[in-house]
Every structure is written in C-alpha cells, then in structure tokens.
Image (cartoon, rainbow, N blue to C red):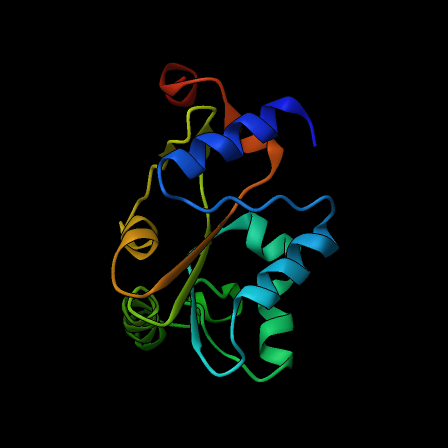
Length: 149
C-alpha cells in the first residue's frame, strides 16, 4: 500500500469512517461480500466502480436481495418502469446495507459528491445501519480545492 492510500485511510479513521484497503478487484469484492450478511437487503447507489467489481451479481448469486434502481436493462422500458424505478431508488436508500461509489476522497478524509437526484448521498449517510462506499485510488485527491477542480 502506498503512502497516499495509507494517509487517506488514517484520515478516514480520524473522521470515524472505517476505510478498508484491497489490493485487487477480486480482493475488494471478497471484502465487500464478507461485510454483507447473506440475509439482508442491499441497496445500490449508481456507481461505475460497483458495476465494474461485479459484486452486485455475486450478492444475488448467494441469495442476498439487491435493490438497484440503476439497472440499465430496466431504466428505459417505459413510463410505468420509470415510476417503479423511482420507488426502487427510494427503497434502496432505506435498506440494511447501502453500496455505492463516491466521486472523490480527499487525503484528509472528506467524501465529495455531486449527486443529481440526491439518493446516493442520502443513502451513504441516512436510512440504514451500514454503508459501503467503494473507491479506487483514482478517486483520491489532495484537498477540497482539487476535488472541486
């Protein structure tokens, strides 16, 4: 683990956020699966990183109920599906575990997000006992100025 990641994890801990390091995509998926009990409901916030991990499929495969209003197969199927999608997005912010990505993490442990609908930010911090926020090293920046740049 390089110094930038180590420092960022320490800064997250100082803000009472438990940062976990994973060396590979497979390691990250394994650690996420270990954090999520099988019999809970997992809500998904729109996240390219989460999609790239394939963790949603792994959760479903083992029998965990997953709510994902951003499943692109269902999003464009018509107005009735849009209403169902909006309800699914609302439900996913109030489930047992919320799994999402973040736009940026500053080296002093701040999560920075621009969220079109607000569901991802709400899901990160309110409505359920556990949030898992996945981020690659590419999301780490020096400070808030760099984050907003």
